Image (cartoon, rainbow, N blue to C red; front, top):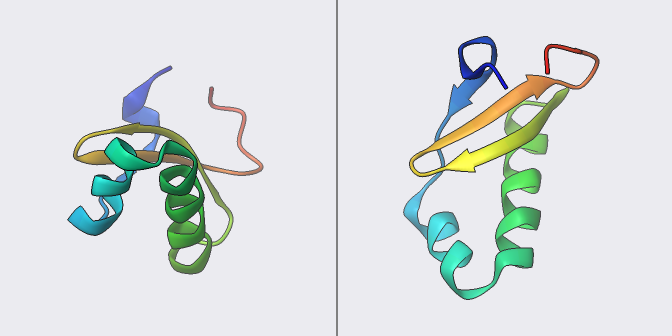
Length: 61
């Protein structure tokens, strides 16, 4: 995966804390967060503190 071709964004600590306690809820919350803030983008990776996204109709990866 070429991270240079992906949109990079961040999320708040409240959501990051979910990763340690409830992985499924973390994934759902990250998806909801970006569905509202960046419709048309898909989360492809989460590596603290960066969330990597790509356009849903993009085949960059």
